[in-house]
Image 1 (cartoon, rainbow over the protein chains, first blue to last red):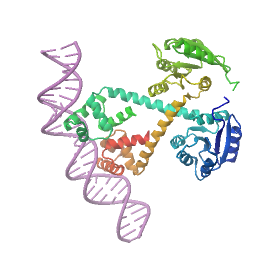
Image 2: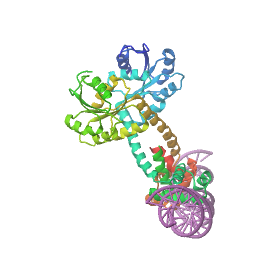
Image 3: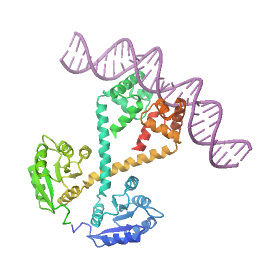
Image 4: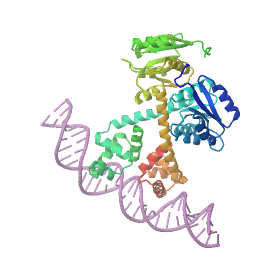
Length: 220
Length: 220
DNA sequence: AGCCGGCGTGGACTTTCGTCCGATGTGCCG
DNA sequence: CGGCACATCGGACGAAAGTCCACGCCGGCT
């Protein structure tokens, strides 16, 4: 595990709790090619410290006074050549996770993560790979798995449609009216209606809104 | 890293390629509390070997003749007290990943994963934690992130609705007709229509189908 | 107090949707 | 060849969806 390409990974630790900061610094500094280049107690202080030390990785607490970890992360990632961000938090609520990912974090760890894994996370993220807490990974997996089951059913149903019927169903799922569909597909209003009726019958649905929802599920 | 709770993790290696099998067995057997309990060349052989050796983890290739890795995984996970499954494959196409997750795999690794990480994956999965290839993790993260951005916009729009209007919008997103909504919410048909009109105006949409799609996005 | 704006409730009216007839033409399969 | 599914269109009709106007209520603003 020794002898990485870049000789030293510079890390910035951001947390308002002095105890947490020192614990993190102690476990990281000196460990396996990692050096803690600085500490911040607030999202406000981050930009200056990043300017000063150009860290490769920022370990960021989410819950901080004044400028929180989310906002700080978002701003960081808008820079040219931004550092990778690993979010460290106590709770892995859905909200937290999604916002952190959206803000551009490459890592999401719970604070009770064993030290060895935090060290590992820094290495991985510095190498451009993501690193998530097992519980978070599991949640994303479950979500993806559940999604795909809906998809399968919806797709199977849609296979029973003929080509034109399918076109019309897709147009419905874009929110188009029958008149719009007729214009776009160069057919008469009567024809569109006929197709719609067939679609409803074949899919065993009652109205176009249900068609839209089913097609939407199939596509996602 | 030595001294795990269970003294030995039993692994079953399933791959139709003899070279891959021996490579995996060599890197795993004896490594850090892991023992390769058996090898199979086909999904067909898996049940008997699982019965015989009761492995904790099954390393499963996806592309195999006869009974493929997906089907084998699905059947395995339907057993009482099933082993954890780590899918090993050359390609991480969306289809592969989703189907594997849906089949109940707890791990998904590319075959070019460095040996140390494969060993680590076995340990993690045996402990009940998931383990995904970085590229797969990244993809799930991107998907979740993108989803959430749509959600945000949709939710913001929905906040402008009053309580009743919101109720009606949600009912529309369930595919309900105005008459059904009126019955369920104890109001007259006229009232429902009025609410629908207000919803359309506030959300700047043209018809109920578009409402359904927007609400659907907001909820997912 | 008076006024105004949003809300929930409706009725009357217009437009769109969906169904049910009909018809024609095409291509494909047994 | 004779069906059969598909795609196309028309008309007519009932049902559903949407628009418009109106009323009473309530809370805030002047």
